[in-house]
Length: 371
Image (tube, rainbow, N blue to C red; front, side, top):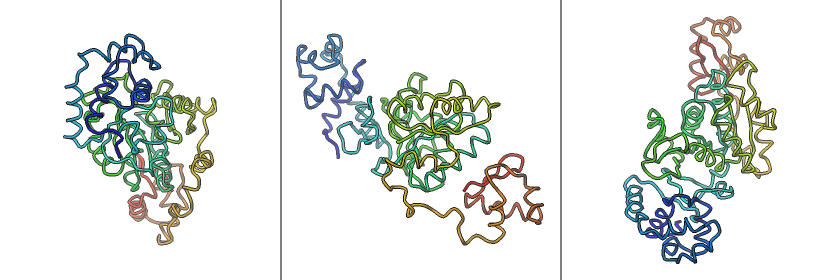
């Protein structure tokens, strides 16, 4: 339910477009004047009495060049594209994000954010993951979805894309936060993925329509990723990875930070290993995450929501195959030889298990268990 009517939302878009205002000052102005349109009717003296509004900002607000047509155009684009303009004062505004120090006054939303999304975990990492990073992301994401978590990420290449895609394949909910306008999906190859996310979650941006994915936007984007979530899981991250910025912001927001340990020989694990050294929770299984978040979950991840790890209806050879496999990659020849079956038969069984998302094939005909 919207707190402001359409005319007030247009006034809020106008206010949001003024350089230097930001979410905190906007909230201060609304607290003083009750609605956005009243801000533009206030006097210079009244404006400068609001916390954070100095003489320069007061003049910017009063300036007749503040573009009403720009705000109207933004509102019309939202209507045309089916984008919801969700304000800080609306019931639909995400509760987790509202509790942070710097929530945006306006979110552009494609899809739906629902109460269930309060139980959310951010999954982030490098844009060029190793096979290890891919497998860990897939395995943990599947298990988190089966526990009822909404998965939040940034739609970037690599770990983000894997987290979103695996969530959708597991019939879970996912939220993608953009560092651009909601009409500027980036990277372009993820447009199809974005369309799927809209059907099973939401695409979110605080930036106006037409905003390009400039590098300066992504730290602001990252604070929303962590702000929507109870915690942030960093899978792989180099020394200067953007995922580390998300982790740092999560800590500032009072949220949990989790990290996957990696090889000391891998550049992709430098960031995650450092996070663990500095106090992030080391994650080997999702139980490490659940235990840490238990006070905030309040029984949400109960047994009724869990799926059995090995369904009873599997054939005997499938059960033997799963028992043999683990998180460590095993070559097809080793699998066939250990089970005493032909390579062709082993591949057939593995294909069936892969379709059920119980195993994953890596390059070089190597296989790992996913549950």
